Length: 193
Image (cartoon, rainbow, N blue to C red; front, side, top):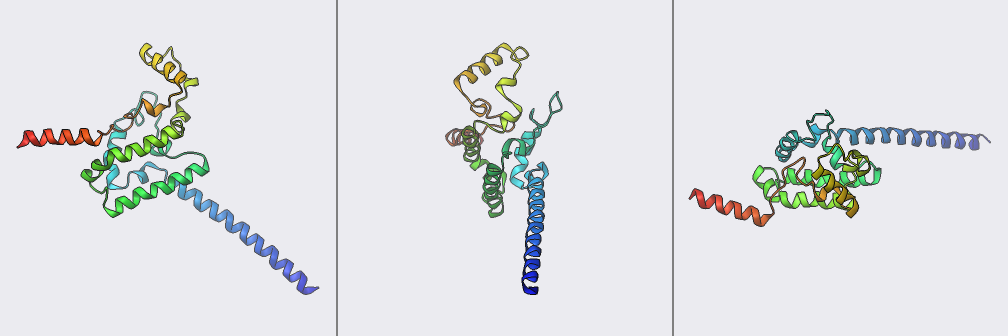
Protein backbone atom coordinates (compact mmCIF):
# COMPACT_ATOMS: atom_id res chain seq x y z
CA UNK A 1 0.00 0.00 0.00
CA UNK A 2 2.82 2.44 0.92
CA UNK A 3 4.70 1.50 -2.24
CA UNK A 4 1.67 2.19 -4.42
CA UNK A 5 1.11 5.57 -2.72
CA UNK A 6 4.78 6.46 -3.16
CA UNK A 7 4.71 5.54 -6.86
CA UNK A 8 1.57 7.60 -7.40
CA UNK A 9 3.19 10.51 -5.57
CA UNK A 10 6.37 10.24 -7.69
CA UNK A 11 4.26 9.93 -10.87
CA UNK A 12 2.40 13.12 -10.01
CA UNK A 13 5.68 14.89 -9.25
CA UNK A 14 7.15 13.75 -12.57
CA UNK A 15 4.11 15.01 -14.47
CA UNK A 16 4.23 18.34 -12.60
CA UNK A 17 7.95 18.65 -13.42
CA UNK A 18 7.35 17.81 -17.11
CA UNK A 19 4.48 20.32 -17.27
CA UNK A 20 6.54 23.07 -15.59
CA UNK A 21 9.50 22.28 -17.84
CA UNK A 22 7.24 22.58 -20.88
CA UNK A 23 5.99 25.99 -19.76
CA UNK A 24 9.54 27.21 -19.16
CA UNK A 25 10.70 25.86 -22.54
CA UNK A 26 7.74 27.53 -24.31
CA UNK A 27 8.49 30.84 -22.58
CA UNK A 28 12.20 30.73 -23.48
CA UNK A 29 11.41 29.72 -27.08
CA UNK A 30 8.83 32.50 -27.39
CA UNK A 31 11.29 35.10 -26.08
CA UNK A 32 14.00 33.81 -28.46
CA UNK A 33 11.59 34.14 -31.40
CA UNK A 34 10.73 37.66 -30.30
CA UNK A 35 14.35 38.74 -29.88
CA UNK A 36 15.32 37.36 -33.31
CA UNK A 37 12.48 39.34 -34.91
CA UNK A 38 13.66 42.82 -33.88
CA UNK A 39 15.36 44.95 -36.53
CA UNK A 40 18.51 45.35 -34.44
CA UNK A 41 19.04 41.59 -34.55
CA UNK A 42 18.17 41.32 -38.25
CA UNK A 43 20.71 43.96 -39.28
CA UNK A 44 23.45 42.94 -36.87
CA UNK A 45 25.24 41.03 -39.65
CA UNK A 46 27.64 43.14 -41.70
CA UNK A 47 26.00 42.06 -44.98
CA UNK A 48 22.67 43.57 -43.87
CA UNK A 49 24.09 47.11 -43.52
CA UNK A 50 23.31 48.02 -47.12
CA UNK A 51 19.81 46.55 -47.16
CA UNK A 52 19.09 48.28 -43.85
CA UNK A 53 20.12 51.64 -45.34
CA UNK A 54 17.80 50.98 -48.29
CA UNK A 55 14.98 50.03 -45.92
CA UNK A 56 15.52 53.23 -43.87
CA UNK A 57 15.14 55.26 -47.07
CA UNK A 58 11.92 53.46 -48.02
CA UNK A 59 8.28 54.21 -47.35
CA UNK A 60 8.13 51.11 -45.14
CA UNK A 61 10.43 52.86 -42.65
CA UNK A 62 9.24 56.48 -42.79
CA UNK A 63 5.96 57.73 -44.23
CA UNK A 64 3.21 60.29 -43.70
CA UNK A 65 1.08 57.90 -41.63
CA UNK A 66 3.92 57.04 -39.24
CA UNK A 67 3.32 53.32 -39.72
CA UNK A 68 6.49 51.25 -39.88
CA UNK A 69 6.93 47.75 -41.28
CA UNK A 70 9.88 45.98 -39.68
CA UNK A 71 12.11 43.28 -41.19
CA UNK A 72 9.99 40.61 -39.48
CA UNK A 73 6.72 42.11 -40.74
CA UNK A 74 7.80 41.42 -44.31
CA UNK A 75 10.08 38.40 -43.94
CA UNK A 76 8.72 36.35 -41.02
CA UNK A 77 5.32 34.63 -41.26
CA UNK A 78 2.91 34.78 -38.32
CA UNK A 79 1.61 31.17 -38.41
CA UNK A 80 3.81 28.92 -36.24
CA UNK A 81 4.72 26.30 -38.88
CA UNK A 82 5.85 28.76 -41.56
CA UNK A 83 7.54 30.88 -38.85
CA UNK A 84 9.69 27.95 -37.73
CA UNK A 85 10.56 27.12 -41.35
CA UNK A 86 11.53 30.77 -41.96
CA UNK A 87 13.78 30.76 -38.88
CA UNK A 88 15.52 27.57 -40.02
CA UNK A 89 16.04 29.01 -43.51
CA UNK A 90 17.33 32.28 -42.02
CA UNK A 91 19.98 30.35 -40.12
CA UNK A 92 21.50 29.60 -43.53
CA UNK A 93 22.09 33.34 -44.01
CA UNK A 94 23.83 33.52 -40.63
CA UNK A 95 26.01 30.59 -41.71
CA UNK A 96 26.97 32.37 -44.96
CA UNK A 97 27.83 35.52 -43.01
CA UNK A 98 30.08 33.56 -40.63
CA UNK A 99 31.58 31.44 -43.44
CA UNK A 100 32.48 34.60 -45.36
CA UNK A 101 30.27 33.93 -48.39
CA UNK A 102 28.44 37.27 -48.07
CA UNK A 103 30.53 39.11 -45.46
CA UNK A 104 31.58 42.00 -47.73
CA UNK A 105 29.51 44.34 -49.87
CA UNK A 106 31.12 42.97 -53.03
CA UNK A 107 30.37 39.34 -52.13
CA UNK A 108 26.83 40.22 -51.06
CA UNK A 109 26.13 42.16 -54.26
CA UNK A 110 27.49 39.27 -56.34
CA UNK A 111 24.87 36.96 -54.74
CA UNK A 112 22.12 39.53 -54.34
CA UNK A 113 20.16 38.58 -57.48
CA UNK A 114 19.97 34.96 -56.33
CA UNK A 115 19.07 35.90 -52.75
CA UNK A 116 16.38 38.34 -53.89
CA UNK A 117 14.83 35.72 -56.17
CA UNK A 118 14.62 33.26 -53.29
CA UNK A 119 12.64 35.83 -51.28
CA UNK A 120 10.46 36.81 -54.26
CA UNK A 121 9.69 33.17 -55.07
CA UNK A 122 8.68 32.57 -51.44
CA UNK A 123 6.45 35.65 -51.48
CA UNK A 124 4.81 34.56 -54.74
CA UNK A 125 4.29 31.03 -53.38
CA UNK A 126 2.51 32.41 -50.29
CA UNK A 127 0.48 34.94 -52.32
CA UNK A 128 2.40 37.75 -50.59
CA UNK A 129 0.97 36.62 -47.25
CA UNK A 130 3.06 39.02 -45.16
CA UNK A 131 2.30 41.98 -47.47
CA UNK A 132 -1.42 41.30 -47.23
CA UNK A 133 -1.43 41.68 -43.45
CA UNK A 134 -1.27 45.44 -44.12
CA UNK A 135 -2.17 45.67 -47.84
CA UNK A 136 -5.33 43.94 -49.02
CA UNK A 137 -7.12 44.66 -52.28
CA UNK A 138 -10.41 44.51 -50.38
CA UNK A 139 -9.29 47.32 -48.03
CA UNK A 140 -7.92 49.69 -50.69
CA UNK A 141 -9.69 53.00 -51.23
CA UNK A 142 -9.37 53.21 -55.00
CA UNK A 143 -10.79 56.75 -54.99
CA UNK A 144 -7.88 57.91 -52.79
CA UNK A 145 -5.37 56.33 -55.17
CA UNK A 146 -4.42 58.00 -58.42
CA UNK A 147 -6.36 56.82 -61.50
CA UNK A 148 -3.37 54.95 -62.89
CA UNK A 149 -2.63 53.15 -59.59
CA UNK A 150 -6.31 52.36 -59.05
CA UNK A 151 -6.60 50.82 -62.54
CA UNK A 152 -3.46 48.74 -61.99
CA UNK A 153 -4.67 47.44 -58.62
CA UNK A 154 -8.11 46.62 -60.03
CA UNK A 155 -6.55 44.71 -62.96
CA UNK A 156 -4.11 42.93 -60.63
CA UNK A 157 -6.93 41.83 -58.34
CA UNK A 158 -9.02 40.53 -61.26
CA UNK A 159 -5.99 38.70 -62.70
CA UNK A 160 -5.19 37.11 -59.32
CA UNK A 161 -1.76 38.76 -59.15
CA UNK A 162 0.18 38.92 -55.93
CA UNK A 163 1.86 42.03 -54.49
CA UNK A 164 5.47 41.03 -55.17
CA UNK A 165 4.87 40.59 -58.90
CA UNK A 166 4.75 44.40 -59.27
CA UNK A 167 6.42 45.66 -56.09
CA UNK A 168 9.90 44.10 -56.06
CA UNK A 169 11.85 47.29 -55.38
CA UNK A 170 9.76 48.83 -52.60
CA UNK A 171 11.82 48.37 -49.42
CA UNK A 172 15.17 47.45 -51.02
CA UNK A 173 16.71 48.33 -54.35
CA UNK A 174 15.87 45.82 -57.02
CA UNK A 175 19.12 44.06 -57.97
CA UNK A 176 20.22 43.72 -61.55
CA UNK A 177 20.16 40.27 -63.13
CA UNK A 178 23.68 38.80 -63.44
CA UNK A 179 23.86 39.46 -67.19
CA UNK A 180 22.92 43.15 -66.71
CA UNK A 181 25.35 43.46 -63.79
CA UNK A 182 28.17 41.97 -65.90
CA UNK A 183 27.34 44.37 -68.74
CA UNK A 184 27.27 47.35 -66.36
CA UNK A 185 30.60 46.32 -64.81
CA UNK A 186 32.10 45.85 -68.28
CA UNK A 187 31.02 49.34 -69.31
CA UNK A 188 32.36 50.90 -66.10
CA UNK A 189 35.70 49.11 -66.38
CA UNK A 190 35.86 50.00 -70.07
CA UNK A 191 35.48 53.68 -69.20
CA UNK A 192 38.05 53.64 -66.41
CA UNK A 193 40.84 52.06 -68.49
